[in-house]
Length: 391
Image (cartoon, rainbow, N blue to C red; front, side):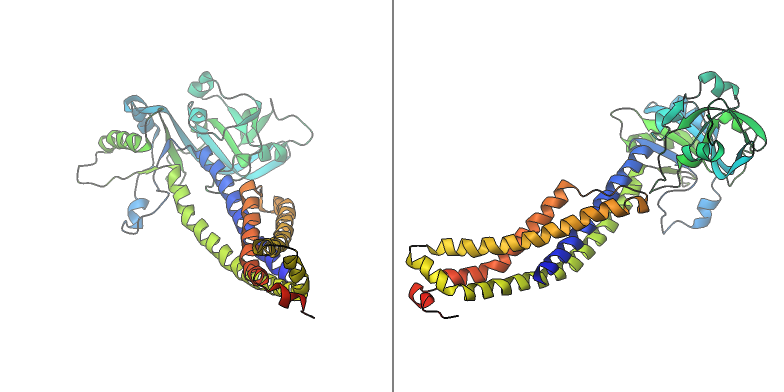
């Protein structure tokens, strides 16, 4: 029962930390895809201010291609600038179709700004295809599997709103982002100059973004200041007027998760702490019983010259070993859990080396604390009185 308490305690705490670490690793991948040095110029902010009325966000204008061009010309701190316009629609090939596909019109620097355009087969768009508005497309992995069964996607024409579009590339399977609505697996990319011929780019509801990547050595704060200096005159904002655009960055997302992780960690420590406390008390009781049963043996050891520290160490080591056994069982259960539930959550669960060491160290520490008093009691026994013990 005592080992069970240690096992449950270690299992609870390390499971929480394994979940947090795995989620952080997954989120960090998504943040890296967003780009730590990329500023997103949008209508809506990623974090809302309580003091700013919602209707002011609502009436803001959407970013335009002309604004992108001005930022490209005037922002000296920008390494690359791109524009994207998105719409959800059905994509077809012969008798097959995939619904709710995110079709995005992009400009030529898009792949230089973001990290999520990962070509698996085929090629990226050429400059001529961008400027000429050629009917070409790069499709996501799920779109490809949904439209093409047992046949090659490259070189085939799919239909987007009844218009034929040539597939020039298929992206690698990437999975859904945990921090945004971006899912490249169910996306189709095409040159913006072609997309605007089949979709109404004046639609106020369709999301559109200007993406600006900072040059090396330039902070996002510097880049934002420069973008603001370009956009305010374009939008004819007076010095006293508020910005009617949002400048977003990936750090806004990661900051929001910090407090959540702290709360989850506290819950894990509380739940696991109670189990460990019960287990630790059980281990202490076991060690007291062990001392009582071996009192005469302790007397013999001391009469033969065993020092107090030897007796002390002997029982502490036993307590630590008992706790380590419980901790190792808990860690084995967590490892099995990571293998079983990883796919269910759509992310990889990893029992990291640091968490293994935390579990073992915590087990050893509980063993040390639980076993010290019984061990100290054993070390202080009088050898003559101990030998006479008849327990």
